[in-house]
Length: 423
Image 1: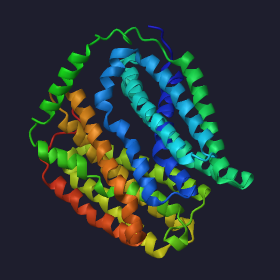
Image 2 (image 1 turned 135 degrees about the horizontal axis):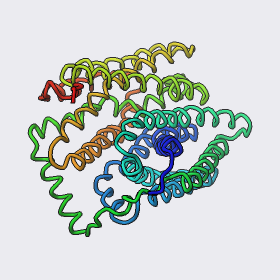
Image 3 (image 1 turned 180 degrees about the vertical axis):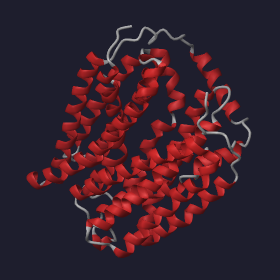
Image 4 (image 1 turned 60 degrees about the vertical axis):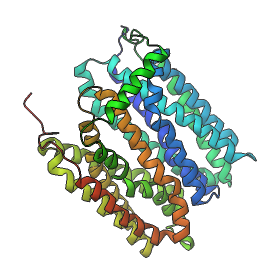
């Protein structure tokens, strides 16, 4: 094994994992809104970009079968750089929508594939002690990538718009910058990533074997106790957030005359891209600490309330439409902190449901359902908002919170699950 200090590659690898995901899921929203696309079209088109993460369990065996995980990481980083450059190139052109969506699709698929390879490489490149030590480091740098992308880069687009006097060229320059960044990351990781002897030594499987194992995984997944309660929980626990996540960003930047708050790109970068991410991170940390101390069952209902009740801040903001950033920052922080805390219950339940035989494959199927739970409501969220307006839309979001309570009520969870043990 060609060794390398993990500090030389783990932080940068998970920074590289975070940037394209945020570009696809968040930056695309702001860019399309600034370019004049309707909320209906924005949420419809960008929600389909969840699809590569939905089909990850189908695609992941081929990542193991075809090449080494190191090769996949480097190949995907190069393709992500190319797709970022493609978005940049097409934005100022006549076919900016079709062209940019095409390259966002490539980026989304490459990003999902990069996730598969990076997470597998993490386990091959580090021993168990190092894996435990760096799990917090990798999460931290993923969050740094989120702040960098949805905060600094969106703010940069606003500054460039003042200089260039062109929305299209300002966003084009931002994506060219991101493409250059990924070329640099590709060059750096070509040197920095170790070459574990186990990478590529795994047993190669035929397509028939992969198909048989996948069919067995799916069959046993649906034979678990409480399968219907579990499926409903995975699909509907985050229904309010699935409706809210894209429209809330559009609400922040939409004009006051249309019911929004009229934030500039730099203001959005501060509110959602920085303050919101910090709130989300702190909520997630606190949720993990609480569940590890008392178990998931003890904290399930406080987490259900945390992920639903703070959504009311958008009802308040839509009626108030404050001109000051202070109440907006406080509101977004509270909503994101509650979401981070409440999301801990969701992630822990995925682990709980996946226990037993085929737990790795079952967890992959759970994460596919997790992506699907955000994709489906996002497809029609924009159309619903434009039909009823922001004020009524956020009231509908609050009403949809009833689904979160209903699906949570049917769960049966071992009281000891999640608690820290002496083992």
